[in-house]
Length: 415
Ligand SMILES: [Zn+2]
Image 1 (cartoon, rainbow, N blue to C red):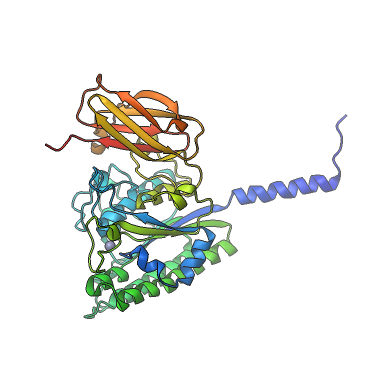
Image 2 (cartoon, helix red, strand yellow):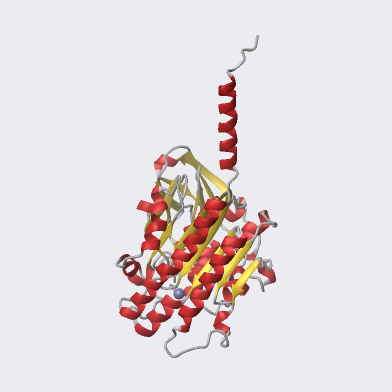
C-alpha cells in the first residue's frame, strides 16, 4: 500500500521544486563594456567605487591583449583589432582586422552577435557606441559575408553628429558623447533589457593620445566610474524587478606606452589590460591564469546558452572565465617529424583527444579533415605525435578536453 506523505511535506516539496524551477528559468542577459585604452596600473591606482562594487560580486583580474608576443598570433594593440578579438574570441591571425581601417575582416570566424542570433533569432541584441564601424564592419551589419547581422537596438554614430555634439579643441566632446551613450544604454537596459549588448566608450583613449600620463587622463578614468555606476544601477534594477540574471564584463582594448600617449606595439604596458565582472562562478583561470580579451566571448556564450558549433569551437582561441575548465596554455613545438604538445591541466579528470590537420580551409569558409591522432589522460599535460605520414609545413592542432578546447598552429618557419 502506498504510504501517504504528510500534507506539509507534500507542500514543502511542491514549494521548493517551484522555487528551483523558477530559479532555473531566470533569463540570462549579457552586457560587455569596452572603455578604450586604460592601462591596468592606472585603473588600479584609483578609487573606483562602482567598479569595486561590480567586482565584489564577481572579480577583477589583469588580462592581456596582443596575442602571443613574437608568435604566430601576435596581434597589434590597436583599438578595432582588440574589439574584434573580443567579438570573435580569436587573435588577428584569424579575424584579420589589423587596424582601425578594418580593411578585410575574415567573417568566417563568427562574432558573438552572429552566433547568438543564429541560435536565438527572436532574442534582442543592442549596441551603444559612438563609432559606427563597430556595428557596420565588426558586427558586420553592412557586410553580407558577416550575415548582415543588425542589432535590434542601435544608438551610435555620434562622432559624426557635430550638431548635437559640437567638437571642441580639447576633445571634451568625447566625454559628452560617452555620457549620452551611457544614459541611452542605461535607459534601454531598464526598459528593453536586450539579451546581448555592447557599450563602447572612447573618451579615455582620446585623453591619453592628447595628453599622455597625467591629470587629464586620470580624470577621464575617474569619470568612467560614474558612467559604470549608471549602467550597474540599470542592471540592479532589472535583476530586482524581473527574473533576470545579468553578466557584465568591463574591459579595455589595450594599455598604453609608458608615457601614456600611444599604443599599437608589444610593450608590456600596451599588452596589459584588465577585466572586471559581476559574473559568479569565475574559475581559477580568471583569477590565477593569464586571461585574455579573447576569453570574454566564450564566457558570454556560456552565460547566454550559445552552443558554438564544434567546427567553430575548434577555432576559438579563448576559453570561458566561468565554470569548469580542463586545461589552459597549450603549446606545440615541432622538431622534424615530431610535434611536442603541452597543456596546463586545471581539472585533471578525463581524457584529451588530439586532432591534427594540415589544411586551413576553415579560413576560406571550408572544412578541415581533422585526424584523431592520440588520446591521453588530461593529467599528463603533454604528448608527442609523429607526423611523418602527414608531411606539411603547416599544422593545426586541436586539443579536445572534457570541458574545453585549445588550439595551436605550426606555421612554416621564416626563411
Ligand atoms: Zn583603443
